Amino acid sequence: MLSLEHIRNICSGEILISEPLAPMTSFRIGGPVDIYIEPQNTDELVALIGYLRKTDVRYIVLGNGSNILISDEGFRGVVLNIEKHFSDVSLDQGIVTAGAGVRLSKFVDFCVRHGFAGTEMLAGIPGTLGGAVIMNAGAYGGEISDSMIDVTVLREGEVRRLNAEECGFRYRNSDLWDDIVLAARFRLPEGDEEQLRARRKELLIKRNAAQPVDRPNAGSIFKNPEGTFAAKLIEECGLKGRRFGAALISERHANFIVNTGGARAADVIEAINVIRREVYAKTGVELEPEIQLIGFADDVITPLHGVTS
Image (cartoon, rainbow, N blue to C red; front, side):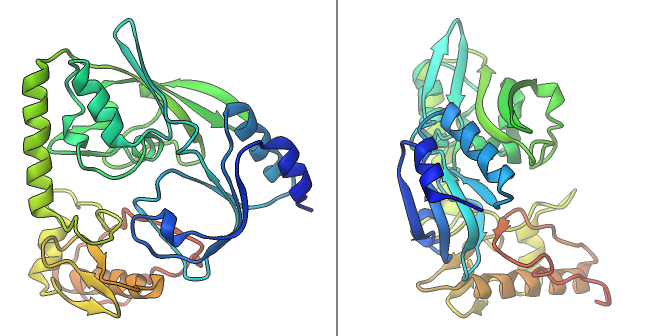
């Protein structure tokens, strides 16, 4: 049985009970978690996860809460937030080391400031480095794994360092889903700082013009199918601008769902299921969610069996 006193003996960071999760996500949606914890270092994180596994308590590791949708009922278990205490970035002998809690904006700024190229395409992507590594985040033809040397993870209770080749990186995916990313190291090509700043600014302007950055959202809802774009398929089905309660399929970018104010997770799930069903019926393409669903039943995404394409 979970002991709050035992958790307090392990962790010197903040511990909160029945804490609302909506303010901790970019979607601003979601119910409370039973226990919210901010471990202050790797030793505390390892000890906490060991204890949670021993007591068979569910847990998730949270960065800044982008690319996720949390159930209206919340999450029955423990949230471990690593953004505050795992956010160092350093440079040693040409190698950039970044903690899992580093925001991508900070990571990009650090690299540009030190004259390293190859991270500018991450400018404007919300989220922290740990989640970006697991998702192999990227844009404009580049991915975060392109210049990665290795990643330090917590795997089955042990801290391990994996070469990039061991991570199974592929489009918006990797083999790291059962691990907890702690840090990653990068060897980046050198570039001219002024040119890098200009390129970062150019991509930020492009992203802000194309995406609904003025409203709460969780980033791209679906992965792009091979050879096409999810947004194009959604728009061709006439779904752009369609509303589900307070959730809206963005009129600016059809692969974004925005919270227009007071949206519920149920609204977003309805939108996701309608999009998948109508796109499949018209095109035969089965859109795969990129957003991570937390606190839902396994069957919350309706299977497309029986839908006529």
